[in-house]
Structure formats: C-alpha cells, structure tokens
Amino acid sequence: MPDFSVVIPLYNKGPHIERALNSVMRQSRRPREVVVVDDGSNDGGFEWVKKLGWAELVLEQRDVPGPGGYAARNRGIALASGEWIAFLDADDEWQPNHLAGVAEAIGSVEAPGRVVTVFSGYEDIYGDGRRSTDPYTSQLGSGIAELSFEALIRYWVALNASPIWTSATVCRRSALEAAGAFPEARCRRGGDKDTWLRVAHLGTAVYTGQVTANYYRDAVNMTTKRGYSNTVPCIVETIKALAQQEAEPVAGLLRQMQNQEIFNYALVSARTGGLQRQAWADFDASSDALRAAALSFLSTPLGATAARGAHALRTALRR
Image (cartoon, rainbow, N blue to C red; front, side, top):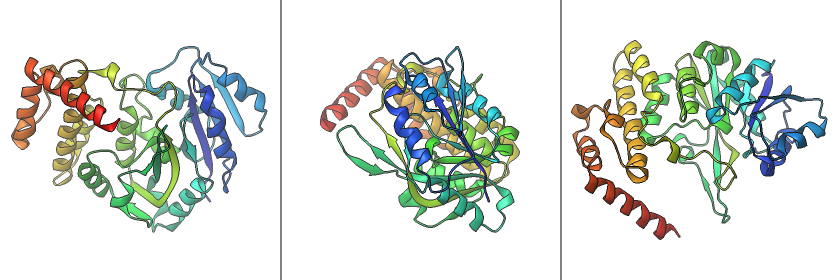
C-alpha cells in the first residue's frame, strides 16, 4: 500500500495553517508524517504549529524565504521518509478522502510501478462564498484515468493550463529526485508546473477522478503575477529540452505548449507593466501568426494602453 509523507511549506500563513493541518489529520487514510518547513514566518503561524506536539509532525525553520516555496518543498522532500510525497500549501485543504483516493488510483492501474504522479480535481473557493470546480475535471471525467506523457500534454494544450495543481498532487519520491525536484535556483514563479512536467516525463500520470482538494482564492500573502512582468516563463527551458528528446507528435505538442505559456505570461505583462519584445522572443510565429501579431501590437504604447483598459473593464464587470 502507498506510504505517504505530506510536505507543507509555510510562510506567513498563520490564519490558514490550522485549517490545512486539520484537513490532513482528518484523512481516512492517515499519512506516515507531516513535514512543515517554515521560511522565516513572522506572523506566529510556525509557533502555533510547534505547540501542537503531534507525533506525526516533522518541523524545520529556514532563515531566508525562498521564491514560491520551492526551496522549502525541496527541504521537505529531503526530510520526508515516505515513498509518496503529497503536497499541500498552507492556505489550502483536503477533503477527508483525498489520500484514500490517491491510494485507490495507484492500486487500480495495470502497472503501478510506472506511476510517477497522481492528481485529483479541486474546487475554487472565493471570499464571497462562490465555489467552482476546476476546469480540468469536466474534461477528464469522473473515473480514474491513466495518462501517458503524450496524453497528459494533449490535455495541457487543450486546456491551455496544467491539469495538475500543487495541493491536489502526489508524486513518487524517486521520480521527484530523478527530475531534480523544484527549480529553486531557476524559477521565481511557475516552478510548480515546471516540476510536474519533468516528473510526468518519467512515467505515467494518474487522475483520481475525484474532487478532493480546496483552493482558497482569498488567502493572505498569496503569490501574484505582478512581480514577474516581462520574465520568460521558466518552463520554456524545460519544454525546449523535452521537445528535443521526443519525436512527433509529442514534440509538436510541446511546441504548442511553449507558445501558450509565453503568450499567457505576455498578457499579464501587457496589462501590468507594458510588454517588452524580449519577453516573447521564443514565441514561434510560424505556427501561430495571429497570436504573434497580437504580441507585436501589445508591445507598442497603444497596445499597452488597450490591454490595461480591457483589464480594468473586465475587473469592473466582475464587480
């Protein structure tokens, strides 16, 4: 049976960490341990965790916060002793059947030894009480699905986003180590999906067919896109390397993914700080002339003004 270690990075999430930890302790299939690595919080959250005195807790505190929690997660992986590493952010939570659903999915496939990552669906929960199921569940259905690397990339391209979300993901420890774990020295943002892509390339991904995690959109101290304007997505480097290793049609799918990632980041840059051409220099215009033209326009002063205006209008309409 799968042996789970839970890794939770913590940085100034004091108002939420109790909810996250309680959701782990309520699991119908309990983990071997819960590793909490704090990145120098100053809001009292880590002190609260230390007072719990749970036998399952493994605690460590780092002095210097790392971007995106990548270094904290890597340290958590190193401290963990389970075969499977289940990730949970300190401001999210699991349903009581999350780990049980993962275990069931692993045991149901023909070759469980090939499985490197397992992920569930999740629900978005907003501050005003609204709830919505993630966009991937409607595509993947309600049954357990075993996905080759090509199948996963096809879903990724069709959805224009990674089907795998951090707090709904469990990875085989050996696969994480072989893939190089989280890119703490290379990525300031987007390192999670970069990691899932490298891990998935090593074997089979499995979808549990269940919605068992909650993503709270109103949490404090959330990472935002504003601080990363005009940066090339770090996943582009990984996509290029994998595309060189793959034959068609997988290589072509990866090139489509590369264009999507660059375009998505460019849109954020256009409406926050103005889009610079070097941010989309790796965009393959020959395969997507329409988006290339849009990027060229957005890189002009008029395009920047239009992007900010459109964003302001969408925000006002939502309100």
